[in-house]
Amino acid sequence: MVTEKDQLQYGVEYPAESGVLHYDFELRLPTVGDNIAAIEELGVGSNLRLNTGMLARCLVKLGDIPREAITYELLDSSLVDDDYDVLSAARDRLKKKRMRPKPTSPDSDSPSLPSASTASPSPASES
Image (tube, rainbow, N blue to C red; front, side, top):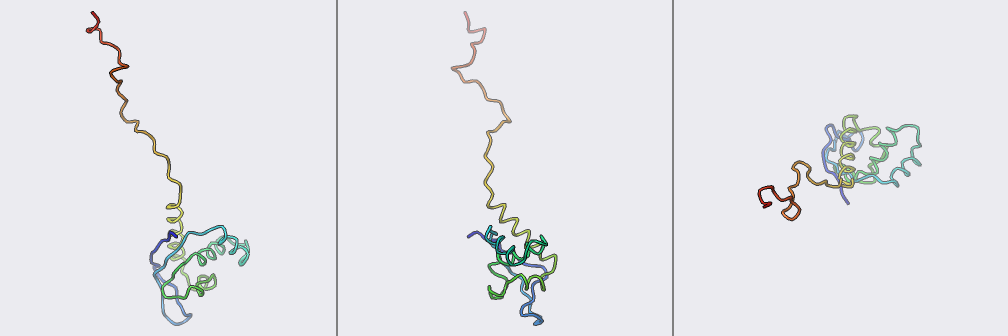
């Protein structure tokens, strides 16, 4: 499983009102299943809500927070908007890593030189 590790700027407080902030995270690539589950759980009214639900599902690790406690509700109540952007950027980097590489094209900088067998004879050699 390919993941992206990084740190939040402001952290997520857990347990609630404990003052303990968690910054380090590991995120995996979201799947269609994550999207379906988030839609079933949260509906389709808000794209931001749906994306937050998907991020919660894709967080493999968030500090020392137990995996089962990393939920939409936790992120909704404790995630700062700039940290949402950090998680979204990590998701985008994962998607980019997964993209099919573009085919390489041959160098077009220098024209090819004719080979000796196909080159025209020079006028001086015709006698």
